Length: 238
Image (cartoon, rainbow, N blue to C red; front, top):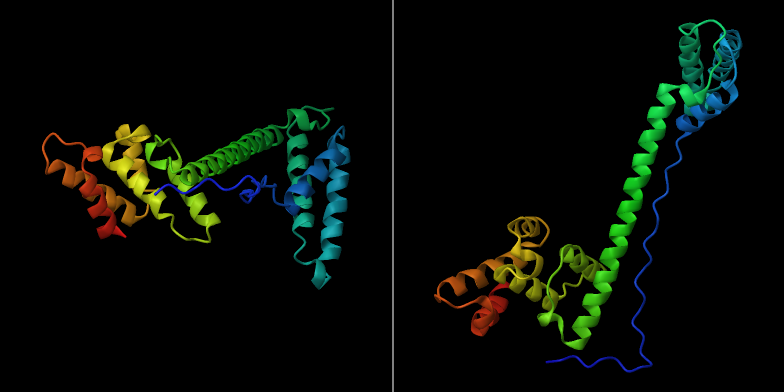
């Protein structure tokens, strides 16, 4: 039965916004960056002197129990030691420049790649939320059964279930099972069906398998033509 569209004064609750993940605070990373800023333009002698100061500070900190676990302090000392070795092996007169430090450049490249991954994850999450909104609207219009499934609809199903307080949307599960059995939408691709097998819960997969098997028992009939099979599968798998 078609669910009536809500009256104009009724507003569907807005889906939660997708939060942009923030880079976690890393004291050791902060310490290394501080050292590099301080060391920029220093020659070997100046870095050696700074290393001695860092070692002195480390010895002083070791006498205080509350400073014994100072992760940033240990990282700063280790970075001064690395820069001391770097300049000692460089030609005389070389000054430290983070822009030519291979370790720094490798970290920057890794940071850029990680930031790109985070941005891609946010865009994907936003796409899933938007698709979940669309499927919810189609449910309310009674038009879900006529909708072609798309890639990542399994994730949109999970988003709808999460919004409903983990209540399983039976009509969405039935729609996905039917589409999977009939190879509709992106499920035409065998790789997509294989991926769905790892993303959908066992009852949905069992529903789809039963639909496909019942259709196989009626030569020449498609899943869409076996209304009784769909009803039977729904009863057995829920």
